[in-house]
Length: 281
Ligand SMILES: C[S@@+](CC[C@H](N)C(=O)[O-])C[C@H]1O[C@@H](n2cnc3c(N)ncnc32)[C@H](O)[C@@H]1O
Image (cartoon, rainbow, N blue to C red; front, side, top):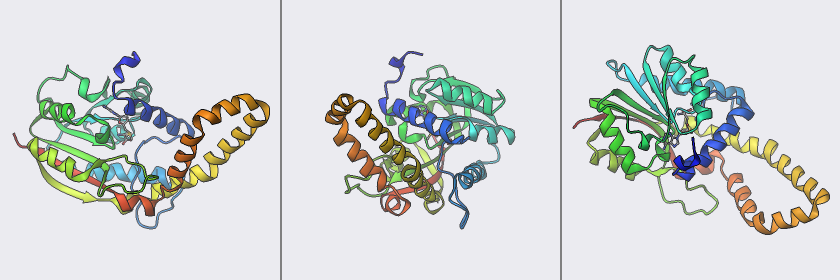
């Protein structure tokens, strides 16, 4: 697939980070997981939390649902659990590596599309009982995304969304601006005639992942970058000078930003919700 297809640059960069996380930590899922109260905030704990999170999603699926469109399927961890429950699942991701892993993870028991959701033309209208977006809705362009939702979902079908949202303006420059404003998302849903049936706030169960993320950055990644920096300074001083000239400010900013992304700081600005909507018209 040519890179021209990746019109949404943020999505493309995001997929590189996701692949790295998948390869470095061997995680089957690419979401924050759901930590039960008191469960260990470790990589092993995250594996369990990710499994639990999918169980929570499955609990939200109405009984009559048979066909599911998993938009932004990551490496297929969620799809694997859905297939095990007997659902017919179609998976979408723009990156061929993620689709390959999804097919491996599900034993080839899902249909796949390697493209941006907004770009896919060949779905028959009203094909699915439920659209699932597990931590992917913030990457999809809102206008064509909602049009696609309206087109591919059966009348009376469901839209299940789990993600973090901005719950107030970000007034701290070192805090990441990622996530859509919550009120804006809910307004769009209403405009598209998607009725909100259920809303669950799982922020306290999801936010421990931010502490784990902090620990991994501080204990593993930053020391590695410091060592690489020292090595390049000594061995290739000219390259280091050029590199520093162009990138130092940006890197210092990013390090500052990621140092402040612990759970306590994150929940000041972000809320993590599971929403179940129904298409009413
Ligand atoms: C954070 S991951 C979540 C993966 C998976 N749903 C999970 O819960 O483990 C975000 C996913 O959204 C996908 N994605 C991003 N932009 C997309 C778009 N415009 N259309 C379809 N998928 C997209 C990425 O490729 C990635 O698979």
